[in-house]
Image 1 (tube, rainbow, N blue to C red):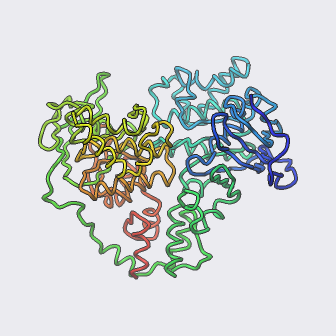
Image 2 (spheres, rainbow, N blue to C red):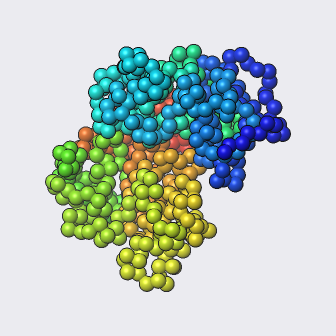
Image 3 (cartoon, rainbow, N blue to C red):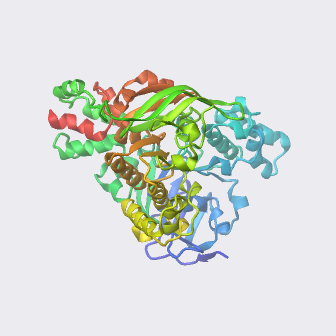
Length: 588
């Protein structure tokens, strides 16, 4: 049973008088899940007005999802715990009114659309919500069709939901909520698992919905560039406490403030901060959007910066005579369903390279990667690893050469302790017990997990489980490491920790292939890009050349990092990192 505190914690008084336009109001709200020892939220107070566009940010574990689930009563009615304070949605107390009452006013779109999609075809799924409201059939179908039109899926009303792309499924989940006509739309990281094309599609829908100023939109989002451009207001949570409630520009403009709570500022803001430290920009001049940065910097760019940038030639990532460790010749793969996922792929990867595998969802990049460790076998052509055809080798044999870290660490973790998880592959390989224990401790030290040796893996945080997955693969000492979307669902700190580890492994000599949709990640860490499109290798080029090719980016629906777009707008050749951009000013 959930208890409700009738008195507020110290400091939990409302921030001011009641606002008649407030549709969400929190007064001294604290919450602790029944199974938890610490509070997930502590003394939260705010008022959100009708028509506001509010972003919510915070590192993993900050309390964002808990707060969102309180808006429509999932917390505390379906997720039991102890609550103090008061939270109202359109005047309804979220404790005194159950979820059935609240969902008529507050629509919640979760991070994983598959968890919300129940209909076999799109129209049926969009109709579920209004049907549950008890509306007449004609109105139910009318609402469902209008909602599909609103998210750009009107022509796919009869599409099998299981055959829709990730972006289409996320838009369908939004349509299902819009069909219920809530005054408040709440979205929990709706683009976190989408490719750039899917992200653009979903965010276009969010923009359209938010344009109706009679509807309030609350969005949890990790990407600061999107938040700075879109939100009227930013709420930041840190360890369950509210640490900022105001304009996004006010939060990001303060140097180091975002990093202090585990968030990344927009690239253009980081550029401004670095130029301020170098004495090249006044301390009171900071941009948080691309347009602001262009206006602020276009008259300050030293002439020599353009000259120096244009004169730079990219350095090769590895020697031209480095050994070829992966070679695909005419590689093709047709799934049993008949889908041709790869066609005529010819590529060589040399020892020590850091290669990004890119392309929209379904382009073929993951299919290619899974051939490298034998999870898939060629149906045409040939793939060689260290000169040996993979078709002649077992998965266990290939695992000593090629390690594969899956996108979701929970798909490969199963042992009762961290020690057993790392030791599993070594035992299968016939290692002696004393040697296994030595190797387990060695790789856990490498990934910073030695203190968790005897812990149950599923009591660890997502970032720690990702490190454990890396450790279990590294234990077999593979010379090639494949990481599949290594930062999905991770906050900025977690993403940096994983990627810095992968970069150190690369610098130590391992060959890295990374499947990712995160273009800033590619710009900062990878040397070379293999761009897949419709099952074919569309391009194979250095990362800097990729982001210089606007036609290629547009044709494959990839988006250059914000700092690269800033350089282009200022008339500079493509610069792929903030550090390289700022260096132009420092050298001038």
